Image (cartoon, rainbow, N blue to C red):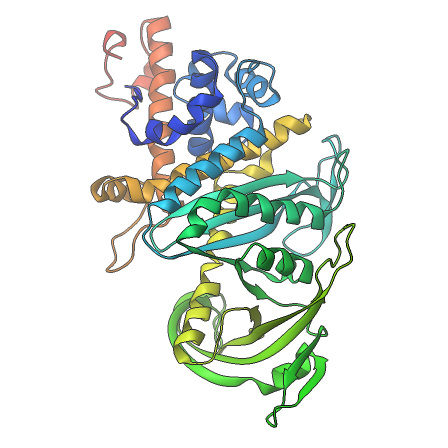
Length: 465
């Protein structure tokens, strides 16, 4: 038994947009089998990819095919480097988002660290922080995921190192990220509003300035509460001070009942449970130079931007209240609840990083070639893109079957997540790879070893495999 792909199955349908990057049939097979291998093995290590691929597992040099493709040694007639793969991922993501009738697209941006604490020989290693905040060797990654209620698409993914030749700065890389995504979404901006939902790592006026110049919106968690702002007193007089001081004017606008993964009281670990959230807000004004931290031949001018400070407090927990800055008005209960819902969607990207880092093993990359490292990480994101699309393109009956293979138990109003679907799909692919290896052995040796065959009663004869 083998996964006989055709242009009509969901996997090949998803990969179709990448076909124009590939110049020959052998490279296409290597590409599609590598994606299968990443999903099945949960790894970007070439040997594991090859072992978990139904076809590459048949070859004695399957891992070498993966490495040569990642390094570009076997793809002279193809464009399978990280840049082209990411650009095509962006195209696929935009097509997915364009199907939605909603008037808004939320752009969730974040940076993540690829930690390699024990690596010494890998190229261009820089200092990054691990989960405990300790500095270790590794690389930085910038990612943008576009979201609507029913669709999700990967719009940007870039692995970077401050030690790489030609590197300017991480703020410059962030600016490239902002403009690249905005330009790609330009056709959709005629009918849809774009909002960037950012963590405190993007608490930067230069970031917000670029987004506003692109006629887009911002919801950003803030870190710099000492930033100087202006606001109007109750008498209508303007005064200046820090954002911290402006926050003393916060007014409670909404209480929200929701389910969140939190730790309360004497609980030993966080769990998903009902909580009450209070949302407060106040207005203020931010003044900044239009050319802040940007090289320009022209002199900048002072810009005054009306903004709102939003505080989100999860009651009954030890969490510090979130402080968010946005250009969307937050003056009543409905607007306060909307902003809370928008920022909660930002957590979706955490699932994406968990999927690619933990379940697709992007931190396991071990090759000593910088181009190959970036290509293998990009291939992991191609695999992640298939899993995002799978939940909305598979019929519900097929999704349920994959979920059951992944250990999911049906619950009312609870659908299987991408990690569960990945686990189910991995088990399916592992089964196919196992059958391919056993089939090859049985055909070469006239059967399986007796003690192995004893585990497999009813296993078909070599001629039937």
